[in-house]
Length: 232
Image 1 (tube, rainbow, N blue to C red):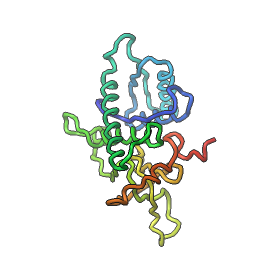
Image 2 (cartoon, helix red, strand yellow):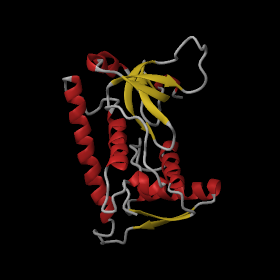
Image 3 (tube, rainbow, N blue to C red):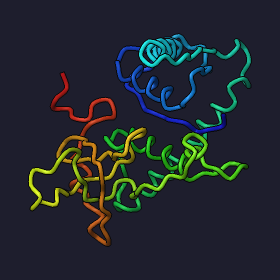
Image 4 (cartoon, rainbow, N blue to C red):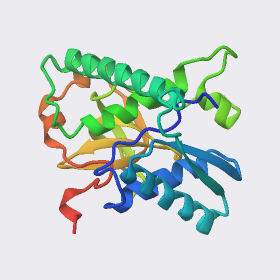
């Protein structure tokens, strides 16, 4: 359908981690169609992940997702996916450059922010890039414009935890590092105190308050393990 769709860094290629199947199944559910053909390359590990996700959405949601591997020897059959890969890589490089400019230092390729950096780049493409019809991928999928709040990746923001406040005398907002949007939910990823949390709202800061290098390097976690301390 020409959409960039969802891109999610995963811990492994196949079905060795439940996150791989779950995140792909969630993306299939967000497509909003009861029957969907899912094209992938012929690598066994990737085909296993696609098959597992298709079985999951059929069993849980009643959505028929039919795996469709690319024909052997047909290098052009998956052209849309190949072009999307190039576009996402270019956007991720742009986000990294902007982040390094904000911090005034280089960001290591193994930094905890990198998987979120890729996801944030895709979020920006889905909400800001318009095709020949004049619509963004987000508008094509949901039928309306996105009107949420966006911060610059890696900047310091004030965030509001999910759930009710403990006291009305407390605004509930606290400081953290903005790491992007949670797709499919009105929430944000925020890095704080050696973990990643989901915030239901953020407030933007100005000037030098936006930069906190110590806080940026302090958080840990991945999309598949937001709080390493709770990993079993």
